Image (cartoon, rainbow, N blue to C red; front, side, top):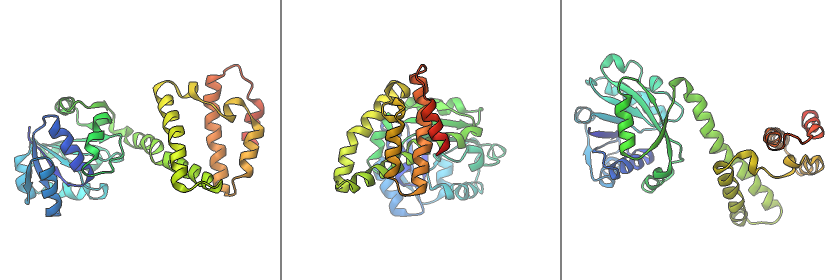
Length: 283
């Protein structure tokens, strides 16, 4: 099968190169920016398309790797051409294949989303990180076996999910990625208040953050849990709150502590957390 990419940005270039290195036939790139298409094609040793219709005719699989807000517009343009027998894919984490490509089946096409659980941040460097990324696949049952074969040829680890679960799935990704950055940002600010430079604060936190996350994901989140909530140490929690001026940040601290309490109870089922639970409920 010939695979083409509409959109030569970070995701399009990264995924195209990763698939190319895995032996998938990459036909080439189409982009509103001719320069971007040329760079994507050069990066994957493939062709440049300056006509979307020609690309649609040449490819069996079309990855629409444009920003989320433009996916539907690109699809509408594709609908002016024949899509019979085509496989349409996008890489958005938040939009289902049905939302992005309504009526695709009526046009003889099958629609899918293929999303990497990875923050693709570098147009020409992130493809190497995709080797370790986990992917999700959702879409039409009719040809999903062909999509699985494509992912397996590339050596991808993946999970098929229901289109109805797409928003919940994206929530999990945002919680683990974007919300984690928010928490690290708060920790950096707190160390800066202690006298650290921002650079030194990030450096100091790196082994703590990466080690704790790695151990928690490799073993069990409750097993690696430490700290005042796990100990039921209400005095320390009260001290922490004296250092947080912003009411929203205080609320966040309490809500996260409540979440940690659930893990603590799993780890220590015989421990009495009555005092801590009362404190979290009453503040």
